[in-house]
Image 1 (cartoon, protein in one colour):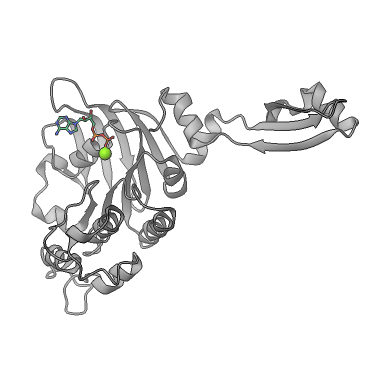
Image 2 (image 1 turned 90 degrees about the vertical axis):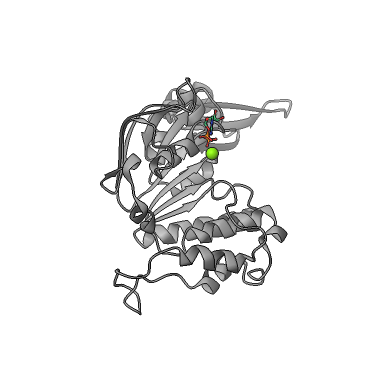
Length: 294
Ligand SMILES: Nc1ncnc2c1ncn2[C@@H]1O[C@H](COP(=O)(O)OP(=O)(O)O)[C@@H](O)[C@H]1O
Ligand SMILES: [Mg+2]
């Protein structure tokens, strides 16, 4: 679906995207994970054809991004990082307007021979905005705008979705709801490009993740492989000494059999607790890039 080769881009003299290479398969959720300012939104904008002055190649749906015409956008849904609604219109008027921009003729999976669009009331209900559809967007909170922006990307049943920080600013319940909807779109066969600085979202949603810092890709793999690549799981255990003071120690899971203290504690039946823990994607991100995700 997407092929990027030796992609380099600059807003000024300094390079903001540096020699990136990756491909995105049809039907996958591909994540750009990196801290603020890493270049995630810039990369999405290049793939959307909004920043045509790049070097190298970025092909989406078989066409070079700098050469996309209006037809390209019929099958693209974008949830920009910032609200893109008309504040004086109601939420429903906004969606009706944006929905009307998409062509309903020529494609044949709709009831009237046109391309089927999503039912707006159903979309509002899906993100818990069914009672707010008639409100002006200027009266919406940040989280409500974020949910509205997301369903706007879905109105025309696009094949390819670009979601820029879709869960940022949402409370845990709405974040969960949004993530479930993203997974539902994947089940329907959509290809999804997602940017996030939230490693939990990346681990939960993405089939593959690219670690991005300073406009460069530092690693690219499935979340599981990334975790396992550096992932010496640790075992932590605690015990009480003769004065009933608690102590703890840890060792790598793979070196467990060589830990003499642990052996003795087991033999003497003195272990208070023992648990193992894998590194998180966050730990791996720091280890590989030397940066935190904030
Ligand atoms: N229109 C612009 N002109 C100049 N610099 C920009 C512009 N947009 C973004 N940048 C800079 O490019 C870098 C990457 O930004 P961005 O792609 O928005 O990062 P992210 O989405 O990962 O937070 C940042 O240093 C940002 O300040
Ligand atoms: Mg961004």
